[in-house]
Length: 440
Image (tube, helix red, strand yellow):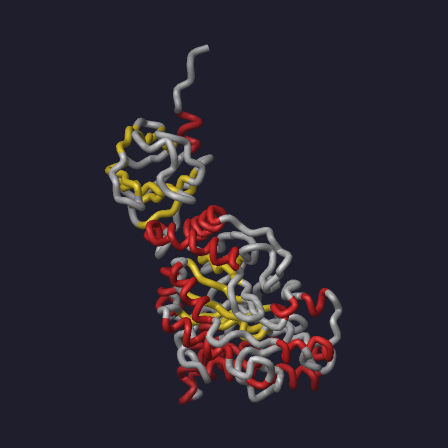
């Protein structure tokens, strides 16, 4: 994983007319426009993705055998010939992905994105372009096929992660300075993407990563995306092949973009299995992150790093199970949310759907929960998890929800569903300026 800045592509009228004249390539034309950021069907293609809000990322590879981080090959300077030998030792249990998909469903996640090839260059799929792939090495079978089948069995949307950077391929670095090497390497990368999007049925997301050492022109990224959308007309793609794509990808941070965006994060400090990494996020931290993404109509792609045998670390299972229990009761406040303007509180955060304001109380204050500066009239309030009505008292500068339990009724966050007389708006400056002060 490594974030790369976006680069906008501009299509000229001449380009457009040439594509329109391509006859059988008319479908490709619309998708070339899509890659340039100007297609009309993006909203339809991304409808499910915007509704989903929560997805599972899976980083799994030869590095999982070593258990010392997914960048172990580069960080420790391991020679290619030495690292290749790990492929013979990589022998995951059959259908490990079934447990991933079941955990994703139980956690309230709606889609999954698996590393089909990470920077190390090892492919989990059956590739005719290399022997450095799962069916021809230790696993002896197509791990991507198992993943796709497992995800679909649980009703998950299917996403493929694919790293453009490759530490194993002989042209992976020299392509930056050798044109013949660049042509060979780009043909290899395009060829593998074609394999992935041809051999596994309908794929919902293509998640490029790390464009080093080439730019969009060097990668022939326009041609790459044209191919992708010809093969998978309904797919959505990210922005890490140096094109805008359909969505931005802030990494390890939550940054609302002016366009579709998805924050990807680890559960500890590593993407791949790192047996010594014990810096786990709490269920509360994950729920708060999910709320923060949903508040600004972003998605939260949360990573698991399976062990070499494909099993999920126990800590991940425990954390995600607790998140799933919360989502089962409170997921309505996360899925398909709209931009939420209210956000000022020292113990709560907010999401919104229509005129319903969801107040997520993560530091429970006791029998009264108060919100200052709400400019709407509250019509009703309830505990989202149980539907139990909550009494409230509204004044000019605040609304107080009263008669609540001294101890938070839900774990790790208690959510109040507040029905307002219009789209919820908060004005803290109004409180600061207009609230009467005592006479001097």
